[in-house]
Image 1: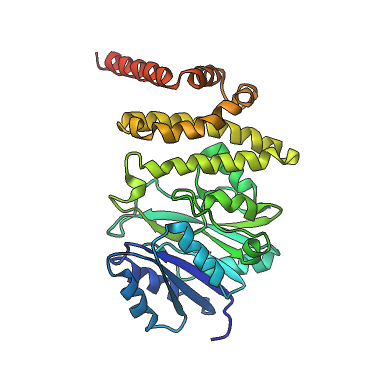
Image 2 (image 1 turned 90 degrees about the vertical axis):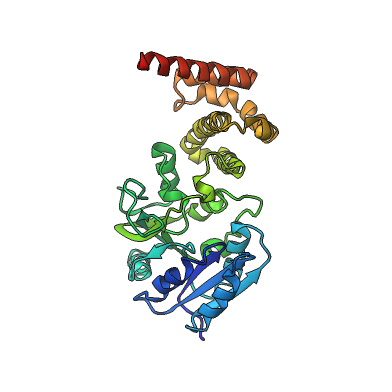
Length: 338
């Protein structure tokens, strides 16, 4: 086959029950000049054989088998084998609207940018809508791509942290030397997107063109999966990157605020889940970063005064700070019940 215009990467692990429908969803695109790269990441439940079977149904499917190495390593295999001028990502249990990639491609071409994005909603295991779980932005049209991260800092939304609701010019990865961090399990793609966004504009469409699936029992649904600490690495990477760019001083201030917020939140969540003793060593490996930016936290305009006081106490005595906060929370609940 000649090189296609758009390559779509789907990494495959433990999605045998959903993959055929996902593949049909991609192959039904109104934009026909595509290839679908199925990167099977050493899944133990027959996904590899299923990928090979699906490849027999359409010449646009290419299959890559690899030993299990996590989502980032599978994504990187896909990136290294893309033949198209543009690349999109579809998770192995998700669905896309038939015109998603045509709409994104047309938006890129019409606006002279190298990146387009759309809104998404969520469905459960049976395909029923999950209210309130959508990924959306209200700021549509052409904008600074880095502003997608500012949306995350200001609202806590995930729109800018995802690869699968976007279409990228492949040069955004290749010319900038971007690969995903294979040491990470959470945030492995988001941790590198600031490098993709740097110096670019994005066109954001208001339409819901992607449907992501929320499955019960998934890693992302666990109370506090240990690998979630990878998010601290992601926020730290952003913080360090913005610190080296004075023209992005506002982003650095927000990154400081979020590193403190996420660190303390994760410490409390792990404590409530009873997992803090097992994870304490990993937390303390990150805490040296937190200690180093305490002066920046105290000067940060996005950290309230009470949180600044909490940060000082936490850096000095994290266990005591958590116990005091927990006791205060329990006392408040008891008061509300009485």
